[in-house]
Amino acid sequence: MSTPSGEEDGCRTAEEIDRSPPIGVFLSAESFFQCARKLHEAYESEELLLRFTAPIYYLYCHALELVLKSFLRAKGLSGNELRSKKFASTGKTMAGVPFAGFKARHD
Image (cartoon, rainbow, N blue to C red):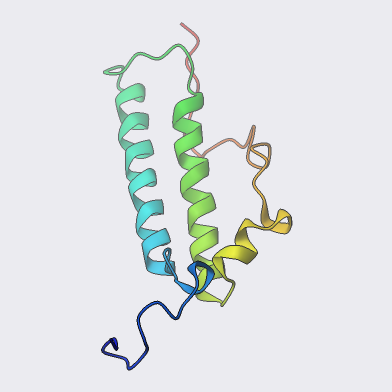
């Protein structure tokens, strides 16, 4: 059976199927950023009490990582290339990076 593009079903391997196109990665980044911003606002207005602000930082950092990945995907890098050790996330890359206007409260 043929697909609309004329390809036969089942001819592509899992590596050839693009399950994370650049726009999809970017939209995920936007969602993480919106969540981080809402939590940040709630924390700053003291509507949200947290012992640690690390979860908010994590969301900002993950959003940034996803934006960078979407840019690289748009420039032609494959998902496999981004998963290689060359682009592996260690979790230490963004650690300790201050965000403009984000002040940790010490209650």
